[in-house]
Image (tube, rainbow, N blue to C red; front, side, top):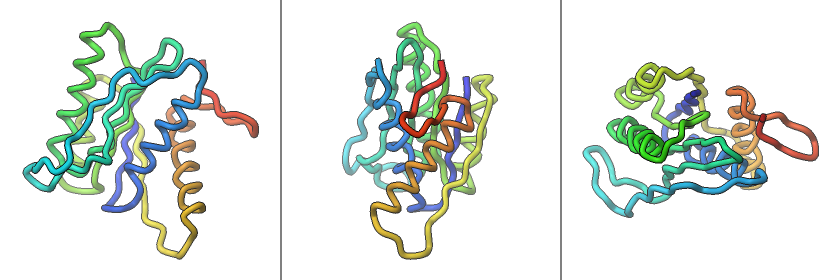
Length: 170
């Protein structure tokens, strides 16, 4: 299994990148959402209110499974969420090809994220998301995050890119 960690400060596009990855997965033939764990709006955590825009998803493409967890702002959610999808996988008899998760770039969140790969005997890939400081259009920002998502998937070995199509490796 491979673990991709997207780390960054607030508002650097970590969650947006996770949703771009999810879109790429779901644009593949034979893809489906296996399980969507929903966050409830306004639930108070120790550190902040959970954002309903975050996702914790399992996607299946052909016979391979992929996890996505964008709730990396709250350190204790990182391990809990990964454990939640790992337990779901175990109880349903499958293993993940990879899990993409997010965390803040320092402190307890980063420490919690860096514990995941060793805990599950996975190979870790680390990516840094950063804020774009110059003015760009929403469309350009969206394209930037999509390109970042493609880069992440290529780096962990799940994508081949052609000009016409984006396909997961067999």
